[in-house]
Image (cartoon, rainbow, N blue to C red; front, side, top):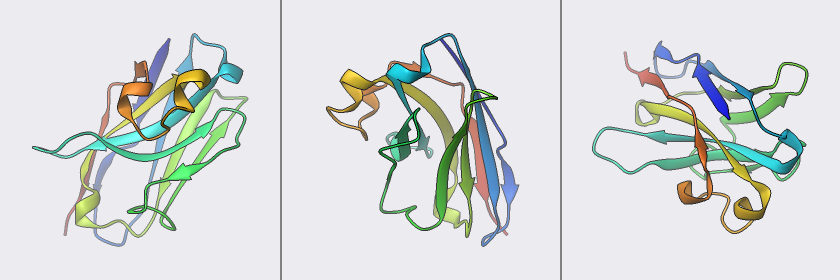
Amino acid sequence: VQLQASGGGLVQPGGSLNLSCVASGFAFANFAIGWFRQAPGKEREFVAAMRWSGSSITYADSVKGRFTISRDNAKSTLYLQMNSLKPEDSAVYYCAAAEISRWIVSVSSPRQYAYWGQGTLVTVSS
């Protein structure tokens, strides 16, 4: 299983970024995929997740209405469109994949996700 995230960068408050995560090496239909983030000195935090089928989309309250998770089956790619960015959104963002049988136990717990990408840094600052 391989997950490769990209798209991070420096953006001003109120700006937008679109993160990508190319996935390979697993049977997508049996997995859920998600985004987490980790700021310096803080624990890894759930951002958003969904079944690869596109159903069961879930967001953290802190990003609801601003972030959108989606995937492109043909490109085997997961996306996180981030709008109205705030300084507190600054973190390393990780994409992750979980088997459905574990994911349904807790969609927001990092422990349920067995596969992780390398992370991409998002900095929101003026």
